[in-house]
Image (cartoon, rainbow, N blue to C red; front, side, top):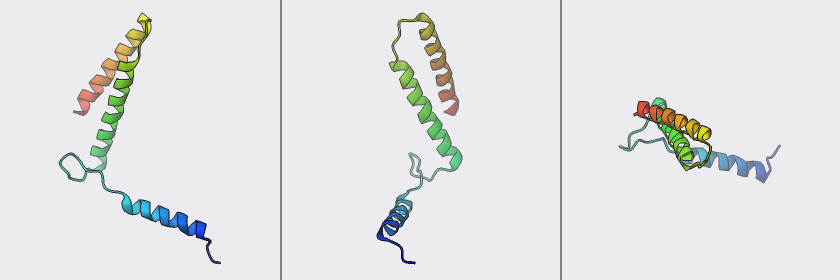
Length: 82
């Protein structure tokens, strides 16, 4: 049975996407292994969470203490990642 143009178009798009993918490269241009890439992603997630906490404003001393504790934990985790 012949395929319609819709299915071929989707197949072509999928193939093009897989061809356009580039390996993750570090700042020095070398290819990263899975562990290094995961560490970089984790650091980015932690930095985004840190920014979210720093942007949050509250007048509640309890909430402020909780945010400070979370910020301290995140900064320790960032320091451990290097």
